[in-house]
Length: 281
Image (tube, rainbow, N blue to C red; front, side, top):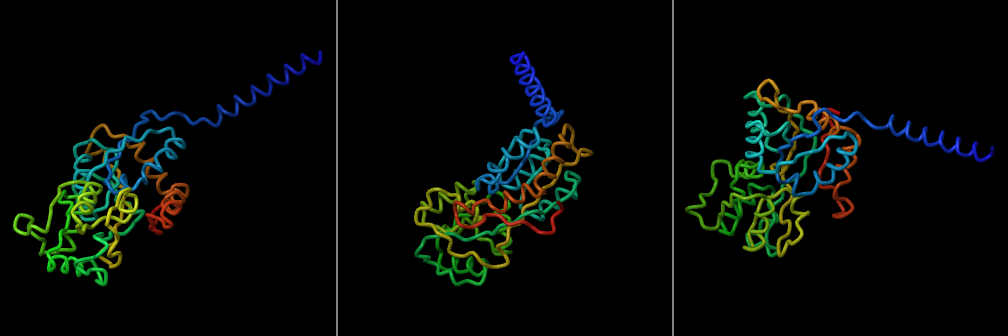
């Protein structure tokens, strides 16, 4: 009789465990794949790679991440190949919404652009008050400069700093328009002992820096803001709008915010991204 009672107790315990597990499991999404078109800096820095498994485990969705310069990332969305975008070029983002492709711009985090270059700093830009002054010194010294040249958010930020005086790569040999992603441009800068404008996160995440170091990291013209924008289902067909909403809601949650705030601290001794306090959560 004792054995029977033990067996019954064990069976009841198993039933309770399975019942609790069933209650805790969330209903699987009808469309589990969310297509995100994002900028290379968010991907190359490793941030999305850190956030992705946490989001997927929490929600049951699967992220399909496409990484390119901001211009190309936005174009993918216009072509109907993304459910939302995560980019960093305000003017382009506002145009995307104005044309009806996006629903709402949600700025939620930022980091800083920096100018990296040889440790010897041949153009003597380290004491510049901002990036514009540093660019003028690089031009005067005719020191090699690697430009993204790819219509990315970083490239647009560079052009904004040059204003109406952007160098002509065909006429000025020191200025190289690479037409490549951030990681590849940093590799070129390392090989050519050149200066380069980059987001700080991607540079710190770069494994082989060679003689490159951050030469200038100050100035109001160096702030780099990232936004989430859901694609408009009234303009584009076949969107996973429910999934896009779920990802945006999670990215603005306390859980994701805590992960973003801590990202980079353990490895680099400093956070790589900062939250915008008044973003919607």
